[in-house]
Length: 112
Length: 113
Image 1 (spheres, rainbow over the protein chains, first blue to last red):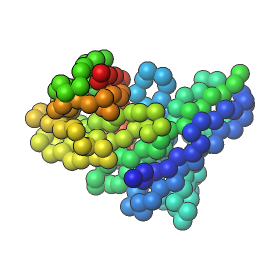
Image 2: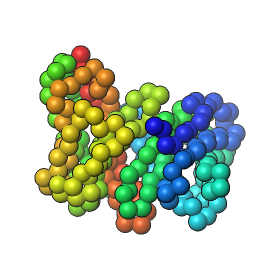
Image 3: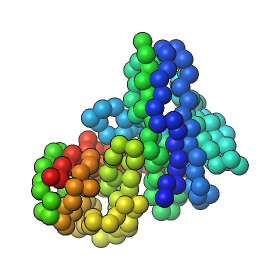
């Protein structure tokens, strides 16, 4: 049972373009939605996270948009750079259990 | 950053043999996790721990057991390894009482022949 569905599986973007990755969840008890970035041979690292009391959070070129009614959230990478080429995972968790469920990942390639 | 050490980093074993992966943290973080990463499946939670001797199952716990006898160590055991358990295994700790950030280790690549 996949509780967090992520799309697309892979994405190719030109340098300077916008990368958009989407996630949808089913469990309305989720109250924390992080995005992780993973480079080859490394463990995932937290990129940015949001809680459902806000609809958007921005950190530099990275923005999370959150739609509570649709149970969807997305990651936008503005002015995408070759160094952003990595695998991105969305996740969701519930306060109390702190059980983190991840999406299946999106492999992003930014062309120079 | 929390210090997490996973061992071994690479292991090749044969079907039917027992395997134990170790995750060691240098800080007193309460929550520790074991995930496996496979192409097309992303990161799937195997087991997690919320304290010494306190553990719970994740999405894909069948065939795996865990133990946590000390705060700093979280062990993942495959009692009888199968080829379907060939994967990269990541340990993580939850740090930051409010942020809830997971900090991952470097991973352990296990191949079961």
